Image (cartoon, rainbow, N blue to C red; front, side, top):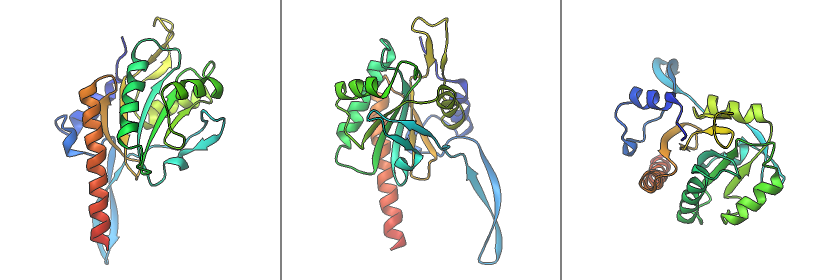
Amino acid sequence: MFFAVPIVAYLLMQTGKNDYKQLEILGPNEPVKKTINGKEVIDTLYHTVGGFSFYDQDSVLVTEKITDGSIYVVDFFFSTCKTICPKMSNQFMRVQHKFKSDNDVKLLSFTVDPLNDSPARLKEYATKHKAMKGKWYFLTGDKVALYSLAKESFFLTAMEDSLMEEGFLHSEQVVLVDKEKRIRGFYDGTDIFEVKKLIEDISTLKKLYARDENIEK
């Protein structure tokens, strides 16, 4: 059985009830002073996802730049997983299908088993799940960097664990990230109803961005 890292529950408690429709900005934050029109005001500095550099299923070295200007969804998996990963990947297929023609939405699946999940193996996995090029990225690389990204940027568990039947412990949670690289939601990636909420929240974010663009005009 896999467990979400406890900080997820903590973050949700810090932001109130678990109501994804509110689309809170999740994670640590701190007040900062800004000067606007000559007046000092207090603003909020939110946690943002850090940078990364990994190889995708096409053996292309990609960085966080692929997510610039995009809403994106993240999970951690490994290709030989027989428990939660197939369920999560099948649910990602639902998300991809819903937004297949939308260039603003991307999906990122990071392996927790980079020793075995080479780009070639990830390519087989991606093909099996009908991943669209430029839409759904399967990423591998340095193990320490992968585990650190999971913990520090997404507040997710991703590690080797000899006590687990398949040798790894990783969260079933998937993460919704906005265009400013802020976390907007955590969802159980094995649950069809949670993923339905995720899809709805992506649509909500798109509407909010469209509204803001109209206001700026």
